[in-house]
Image (cartoon, rainbow, N blue to C red; front, side, top):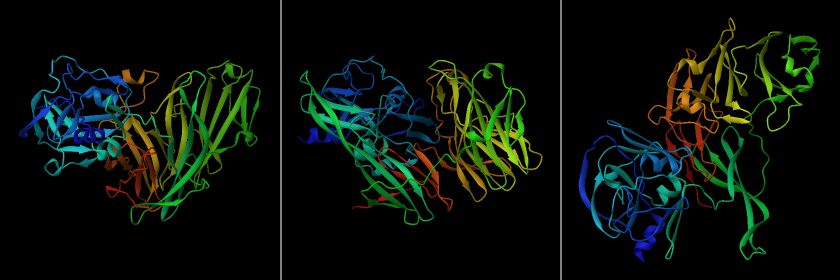
Length: 477
């Protein structure tokens, strides 16, 4: 019974370490006899090069390079900095090596890992772990307690005496999510959206689920104490909006092959394919001394599934309107910021083909003196994606990500890749220099009015203060 309870709560995950690290003492481990399913795929412990293990009545799970990516995690190894593992989804199918012949129930020798280890940016002191991380056949193994499985990795685990151990990297059973809805001077408010279902018996005899209603629960984050507390159980008004654009399509008109704005010609000549049925969709993003105009012209008579378009971006300041020709029309403006010396035009995502978009984010800086435009992504070769988060103390805060190689960017379903030792959260100074604030952590980032940078998990509402490198404590009801 002790072993079954431990299996329910604990699973091991390990990373293939290419270098040869130093190990501490050897320990005896065992290949489990119970069946295992990972993301609904049977895992063959008998033939797996890296089987699951049991140590001190706790189940351990191997995290190889491919395993981590199939389970919503990424890893990095450095001979000096050691192992770094973090949540980040790169869609990969579980295809593990099956080149061994292990004896189910057989005993083997592993080592207690004795090299630096970080999980979601938190350093692990393996000498103080109740279930220490192990190394077996050159692979790091994690004990997956509630702390690791739920809090750090975001997994579901289920144990059944007949079917054995089942692990999912996606929360199939969750019917709720969290969203940031208010940001004030002293606190922020998160709303939990909960959908309730009831079991129903279908005509074929199987069990289905029927939606019966929605519930809400809000949580207040105190910046000063870095604590979360339940606030109410009613639906709250949403005042936090990350897209500050205002729809101003009615201020633009088409005459012949030209587009007019405030009675003046804005676009001299539209592409010929736009002329039959042009449809204007325009947004204004306001700053103190200037506005950003994004004007998209759709060819409305093109059949589904793709409505093509052309996009123009203009800076309106001091009574003049200037087109920003450096801007890639495949990127849609998401934010617009202003400092003492420059404007920043920011996107989130880029159109690849048809209706396919990736998450490659771009920032263009426009100097107030001279109007020079610079795509900041081009200045940092190691960061192809720069995602704007917010402004504080005349500095722009961003998430900078390696994103991927050229071959990756050609794939329609490609999202992004992360380099854990280099990527993360930064601010950009007036000289375009990046200053790192925190290592990469997955989640939704936001900046408070007093300049604190936070990131939260929308599945479990785990909040991290990136400015002070602290986990936010959730208080009991």
